[in-house]
Image 1: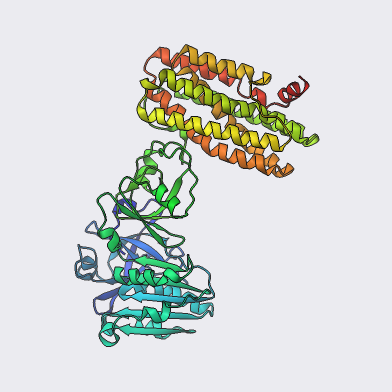
Image 2: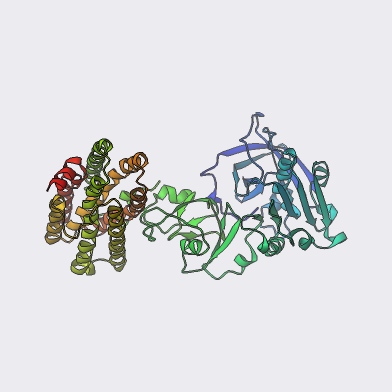
Length: 326
Length: 230
């Protein structure tokens, strides 16, 4: 997970100096880092779907999903793909970090939590397997049926295949593109399964394709996590940005000159409000990720600086994406 | 997290903010005590018409705010920024909505919605309008104190609503509670933005002190008893 401004960090989450207990390649272009406290103490508990903020020594901040086992409280594991167009985050991890070194980390936070369901369909593209892996482990431990659809450029580039092979109770469809082509989404999403939740993480084209296929599924069945803002955001009109509603995974584009509150209401999301002018504070919403651009008159400067909450009637975004606790 | 009394928009109240807060804290507390006292008395005789009588001066406040805010805008509005004209007009609209929904609640309890100032609300209304005559900011200070006072009545009303199951009144007051955060914040912002002189601040203090001594009185059981016996 990348590209969030460092100002969004550290206010809600504790900062840790962790030791890189293990750093090893797990696929072509992918390394796994196991992080521990220097004294071996337990780390904060986390749930599948959680991520941490890694504050790299070069000043760059990146978000990475935890992909280990939540039951193992003495370590956190992340998987990092070396991005071909790295702007100094993943390339630093691959080139500069060493086993035994230390790393500043904030978190964990969870914008992609696993909800209760009878069955699960997991769809992962490339390094998008990282938040999915602990989800499968949790579902398998509960004895619930699951299906994984995992695509990648080639088998060599796909991380954690061995671990996936050892998970019980479900069926894993491993689909390297150079062998089988693209994922057959129609086969798995072409029919709405009312008892099934879909969790998807991967590159934007995969997410967009899954979103399109899930139009026939009930609202709330699809849960998404993107690596980066969608193409819609990349092509956005100047002054527009995206808002993600964490509880449903729904994404909304906020155009210039329209408030977040307006767009939320148009999409059936009710938020208490009164003045719609940044005075009463009744439309206060928690910000889970991204950097708000505050235009209200009532939040303290400390609260504005912290960036954990915002008034959606007037405030906007400095980042391309805001994830709101809605 | 959000304190509407600390709304930004001007520093004209900096010298008197502490005293204003004391006045507002005092009137909120007195209103809370008066409301608790009313519902303690209501618990003994839960007659819906008594509750309707208690709500009647509330309804009058709502419509009197509408008259006052519109007159405030007509007389003094062009001395304000356009956004403040808009927001005062928006407040006026919301007060009219409150008159409508409180009125509906009164009727559902078998009471009568006031269409002229009830005797027990007259000192409150007279003071408000006198303030408007005195100074461009005085009436805003007075209604700001009065609006703030109402916040002391919400919790005791919600608790009594659970005991006596008057869900409609609670629903109405939940909406009013939300809107009053706006009204209190707006009043404070307007005062802070346009108070420039010691004379302005003196008039604001006078209006707030005066309203502090009046605003809570119609919440008492004695006020309701007097109104019903009249």
